[in-house]
Each structure stands twice: as C-alpha cells, then as structure tokens.
Length: 218
Image 1 (cartoon, rainbow, N blue to C red):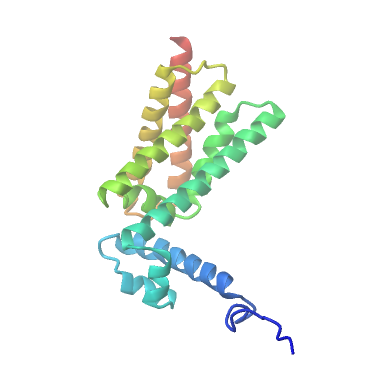
Image 2 (cartoon, rainbow, N blue to C red; image 1 turned 45 degrees about the vertical axis):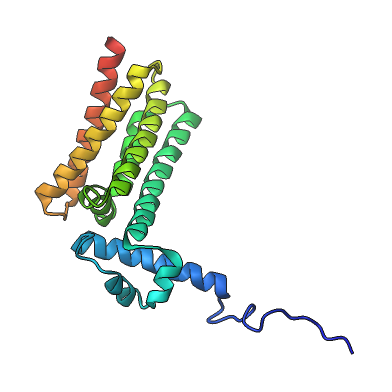
C-alpha cells in the first residue's frame, strides 16, 4: 500500500484562517505597532522587552524569533517609518513628473503631511532616535543621505544642476528639516497640534525653496 506524504502534521495547520508564516508575520506587525506606541510614549530606555510582549499579547519567544535585541526592534521600526515617508515623497515626485509641475511644493507637503498625521512617527524618528546607540546613529546618517538624494532629484526638476556642492547642501538642508521637526516636538511637548503641523509645513517649504533660489542665483 502506498502512503501519501502529507508533510509535517503542523505544516499546514491553520488557526483563525492563518498558516504558520502568516501568524508569524502578524506577530511581527503587532510587535512593531506596539513598539511605535511604547517607544513614542515612554522612550527607548524606559521600554522593556517584557512590556512590548505583554502589550502586544505575544510571548517572549515570538519577540526573539523576530528581533535579536530591543535595539534591533527599534531599528526595524525606525526603518519602516522612514521607508513609508520616503515612499510617499517619491510618489509625489513621480506625480509632479507626470503633470509637469514644480515638484517642490507637492513633495514637501506629502512628506510633512504623512509624518505629522501620526505624531508618534516624528517622536520615534527625531525625538527618541538621538543617543539610542551608535548603530542607530549610523542608520540615521544613511537615511539622511537617502533623503538628500531625493531632494536633489526635486531640485534637478527645477533646473538646478547636480554637483558635489548641491549634494552637500542637500544633506545640510535635510539635517535642517530634521532639526525643525525635533524643535517642534520639544516646544509642543511631543504632542504637536494641527496648527503646529501646518506651521511646520510652511517653514520647511520656505526653507527648501530659499536654499534652492540661493543656489540657482549663485
């Protein structure tokens, strides 16, 4: 008699309609969602792995299946938030390319709007990230250069030739934007209002436009 191999008894097991891989992905998303809440509320140093697991209703084993350390979890959250912001800004740039308009306004509004729609995001990216670790600081620098490259693409659509000087200025401008956000968070006590977000949008737009105008004039 031939016995059909059905694989591991647990391999195809579904719970609440999810297989093992889907459940693992769900636990990871729960942990990252919880990390956004706790890191923004309590800070990195005051948030324990146990608190993350208890709030997310997952076991410690599930945490270590996804992250080697608390810093690793923070870095994953940091990168997810950064990627979401850059994707929104890139989409705004592509939309401006499609209709032939100046992309500066659209990209700035898309970036600031997406970031300030959830105040926890700028707190994690700019209010909590500084001083967490050398690895996080290195990643912040990498992300700053990536954002600067996008800014250079925006400037290029406005007729500004890309040079080593424009590259350096783009990094400086992105750093300035990040400081504007950090300053807003400090002034608002980490709870910026809709008015604060609108004001920030105007400040960033004026800053980026002024630097571009000065560079084109020189």
